[in-house]
Length: 616
Image 1 (cartoon, rainbow, N blue to C red):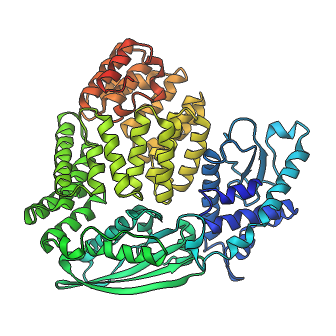
Image 2 (cartoon, rainbow, N blue to C red):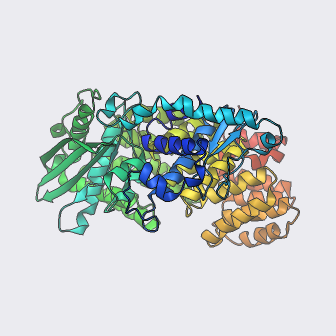
Image 3 (cartoon, rainbow, N blue to C red):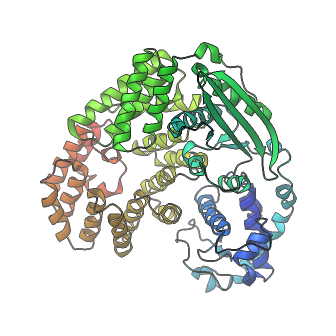
């Protein structure tokens, strides 16, 4: 029953390719053929490759194995948390391990090498229970075979499956000869994804996860497998004068069946608005009921100059670079100047100020948050149905109004249930306000909607850490680093989880890698010094504390941590108090961050939480 439970779970039901992969390796191992599980066999037997497959140039098996490891880890953190048996796929090989789990869920990191036999956990290997595990493993296969027909015959009518249909919109191709028009085609893609994500009853992959396929030569079936979707939309954009032509195709997988294709010619002033019309047509083609739009594209027409500036603003905003963000502010302001009642432009302006505020300190941070809030309020005054504006308002509160922020997040997700960023940031609020278990749930939703994006994945590991589920957090961050080796926040998260378990050596080793990746960024350097101090070596914390006092760009939270490490409790509270006054980076985590556990009994800590309206 265990294998059947896995493939029927919410995490796996949308990924038939991974289910076939899992079934195949389990069957091979149980039938005594685990030694044959090599890359070539998996490619030809599971992934449809022919005899010309060359693993030296085609990494599809390794890519799918990495996805399977990540899915299994997520399953045992969620639906399978209480399962008595666990299946693992060690890194470096394709032979599964069947493990008897004690009362606690899986805690160990993935093994680092291939298994030469069916491996058992130490507690089972020495207990005389190997027979029980063997018959349990046989049960995995026997119970699951009945469902295999369903998976190999999926694809003719994916919308008839028991799970919500899933869809990915690939970046629309810019057919103009002008590369400067990329902002326009990207904007059309973004608008179509947003419109689809606002329709209940389907799972729409986020922009950040599909963007990597722009101009990629990856075959469509491979993209569908990697993203775990039933449908893919691809198309083109051609802008000629005041007319925009958009062509789109809807394709069902795994059989790559073309469902529908059409070309749309519209005036440039309604180009953005027409994406809602296009989304409705796509949804109807996969049997999703769509309510008639409250407004037609014609009634949503906008000044073409304003629309162009808005699209350019979004194009630069997505870079997340400091210069790009500053440019986005200029473009959004130009859009507003051309169309003073342009709600989308105000929402974009709010987003730019919000991201900029997260990188500022002191009075500059407050000024930027105030600007973000005012722009969001203006956007909502013009159009209350803008989910993005509700998200912007939720994250721009300076007065610690957590309840209002939560209302805004809820409204945003009501308007746009497929907004990965809204789920991710809402997970942050739930965790920061003392509900990390609920934060884990929201973070998982963000990961499902954005499976190829590092940020939601990191948020899930962070929420697990805040719930004190350190073993799960460690397992998750190890997988995250494997999938996204350049995303430095994962190194910080893993280092914190290791340190919380007293694993000083492991914490130090991983944080050194993070420090190297960031060329010594203060937060990572401070965490490394903290690990040394916890191991009885406080010299580095003292050195950094003296060095950082000479700078005005260090968040007070870093200074507070180093003060704690040098034994100056009073100074630590002084820095934390300053952090609260300035709404500094990382201070929102004060209520739940394990680093502060030694301070919680001090009345001054309660006073800080009261200032942040988090004392309850």
